[in-house]
Image 1 (cartoon, each protein chain N blue to C red):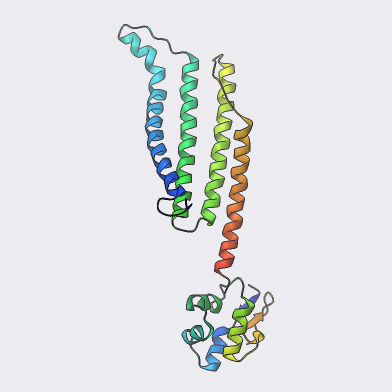
Image 2 (cartoon, rainbow over the protein chains, first blue to last red):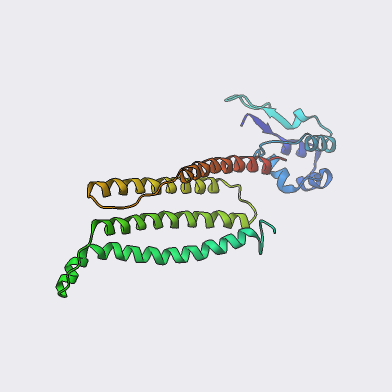
Length: 74
Length: 164
């Protein structure tokens, strides 16, 4: 997949657990796990907005475009 | 009347199909026995001093019935599997698309068998009535279209499920 999700890294930086984020954002843990593990096929603007608001970050901090063969900016 | 759930149209349809399946298995068993025994009937009757002659028409009729019931059994089984997924709440799965496609191919083979038997009966000078209607061919095409609808539905459902 070309778009990778680095939610776990942002969560680690903020010292927040997935369960806590789930409660704050109002998205189930199952859905956040789908997002975290990169299995998600799409993300709603409303979900992205809520996550960014709670984690005090930009969408670009969570989502990265990975060109084929090139590594992500870690 | 509701379409899904207990006492719904789908459960009535499933019950009807279960009954049909039982009747068809019995018919299939009978036709299979007839198909195996029929070639030996003249010899057996001669053994007992009788004189019975089996016409080619009868053999072709039984063989055609065997093929038709086999196809119908396959179709009924696939429909029951599809209804089962409907009862459990998620009919839009890739398997159902494959099942519909299987039904389409089975109906196609059934119609093909009719023509094959018709052709063979002409060669062997037997009189077998072959009925193939325009509606049947239309239904076969509709089943293939339905299969693609279910495939697209399954794809959309998967996308919906994986949208966060």
